[in-house]
Image (cartoon, rainbow, N blue to C red):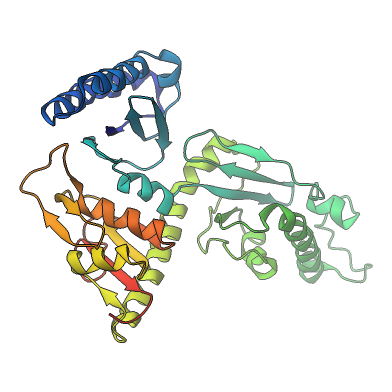
Length: 351
């Protein structure tokens, strides 16, 4: 028996009571589903006890994000705090309901924020389920003036080799190149978005020296000197939304190009078969599609009239098979799937 529970929560501890109450209701619903579905009573009881213990754990509920995912079996449970806003749901089956969790993987709401000014620079790591933290970066310049070996970079004297606006630009670029160089070992091998928090001229100049492949086009246009890390995390959310929207748009463009060569499928039965045989490279899946049924070892789909403990959500199972066979899954919302259906697949070879 596998019990999957999702519910919306809040980072505000003083307002978490409503979510805890909802969680208890979902536990009762899961237990009822399990018993009417014919599952072993002892297994159901053990899973229910574990969930009720979690509901009573004050320390656990003290720190939450925007949603909570809980996966329970008779042997124990696993939880995930998520930045995404998810609807409350419960499912009992022989496997976990993972598509909403895949949404968090598709759009993880994690980033690095480069808080940049002439007076100093710091790198802040933003997480979906933990407070933001400052990252130690060896070799990071203290500020623009000390990097230039001057008391100020706003020296307008004509007695230096480079002076005025030209001198400022040269010193700014040197400062920014040193920052980019210091960041390279930290960011190497990552795919986490980098968001710049700065004002002009540094905000305008930094993209010209940046060498990291995942720097966001949109910036936080504010002087970060007096901005706390948690506030930078909050300001990063709309920027991350635009980053993920751009990722999704690019993937949808590839889907359209692949359609002309016969390398796409949008019918659930076709996609299920392709996923079973490892033919799906990229899957777009509507995470809110709840159609129940079964998919056999050859990819044949049997639709069920109602959701019971003896079946599972078909789109969820298709996504699982894609991942098992090395494909990528975009867990999206209704209306975001290319082709206008509940699933859209880019195939590894023409159908």
